[in-house]
Image (cartoon, rainbow, N blue to C red; front, side):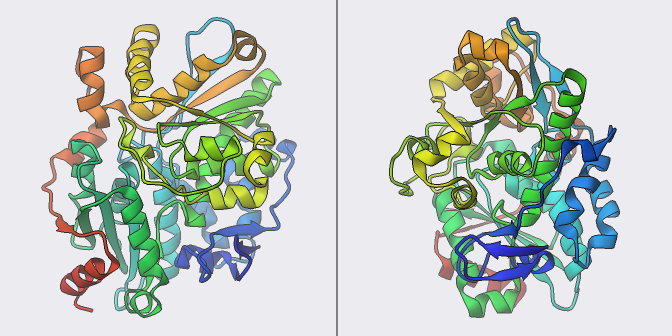
Length: 436
């Protein structure tokens, strides 16, 4: 399988795409051609690991990792990913719980998969690979946890000052010597621009052997498609109906992963993208010009993105602007609506939801009664509400119990450095820390 830049300038192997993260022309890698599959090929694959082996086989054909795929999948999917039926009337609706991993967020899946791949490809202690990751909340913690103390690997986490929750900040800054945590005096978009700028600097990139663990890396994208494939297959086999998904999304990696799973033949119906008040995706689908903008700070902080990178992939496969309406829909959710949803979810379902998951429940409730009844819906729960206790607990009027994984992380000491939002500032701190 070959991987081609969305900008058409480069074709590489999977192994090269994993290590480099982004194409030399600034584009993102996509498999070419997309493999075609029939859901019947999956037979009675009851466990997600079995679904993963079948789905990923064509993507890994010819890779140096082909024979390691079974182990990589086992390392990645070592925690439960349940689908919980919600007590609603007038239709069938479930919650896909993606927050049972080591850092209690869906990003654990892609981060663990990528770490397992790169450790096998590039674990050179004499010449380490440096993973650059910009984060609006959950990505950095998941990547740091996945790569922590792995030989031959360094991680540099850039996160925006004052735009992540306290518990998110703690899990971005509490790791071993091979993880450098940088609090940036700017926004997530500044952090993302620093990563792209550093990787585009040929001399700097060669010196530190940069790679990316953001959702721009195809190694994050492929494993995320698996939980959509598996949950849709199990649903279809049980009810003989394609489920539709509502996906909270910011940088569009999670949303595109669902689109990718459907594109290769999995039984997925409609895809609705739930965004916060950063409306660039919604406006583009409604026909506006694609014009990156400054991000707006919201309660759903991990989705505060003004220039979603994975739109480049979606545009490549799905078309421009209003053409995308044939493939996906989008619903924008305000902070006031998020607040109301957190309260309503707690009262109706009996459990707390994080602000990002609340955007999905809002989007579901905005569907017509007929559409809720006529289609089966799976809402994607992206993070544990305990990570956002300062938002959630005052709304529901009670504390959210910490899962064991977060309890262990919050007991670790923090360490980080503050820098300005420039590539030059990043270069200086890398030289000081790693001596290059």
